[in-house]
Amino acid sequence: MKRLASWLIIIVSVLLSVNLARSIYDLHTRESVIHEARDRLVKTQEENNKLEEELSYVQSPAYIEQQAREKLNLARPGEVVLIVPEITPPPDDSDQELKLEIWQQWLKLFRVGV
Image (cartoon, rainbow, N blue to C red; front, top):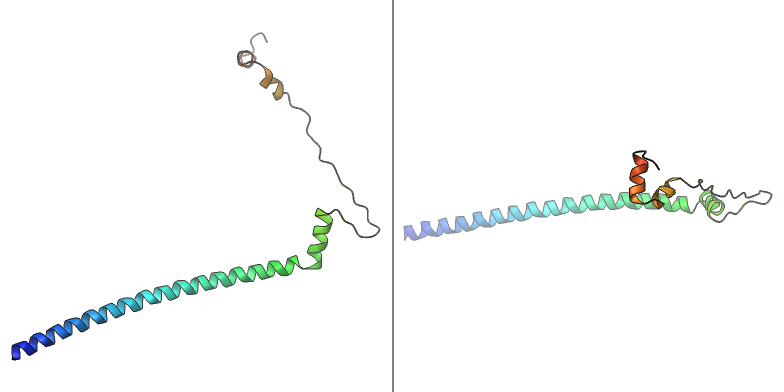
């Protein structure tokens, strides 16, 4: 009878130890999940703050005026809008080299009779 009681106490102790270890492990994994969620929350709040700042800038009268001037070429009364055309570079002589045959390009490279 004493032997059975001691075996029963040992089995219950092992089961309680395993259960305690499992509970500690679950608690540890839940803490890591909570930390990850907090990190994501902080990053999301920072991104939200940046977006709110950008929104307030985009809605400001200075930004609206800048966009109207740059993209729509609008001006205030009395101002004159000048549109400067893009200057294209003069044609390059390298286009002529592309029109030459390969063997002519080699001769030109070595400065032989071409």
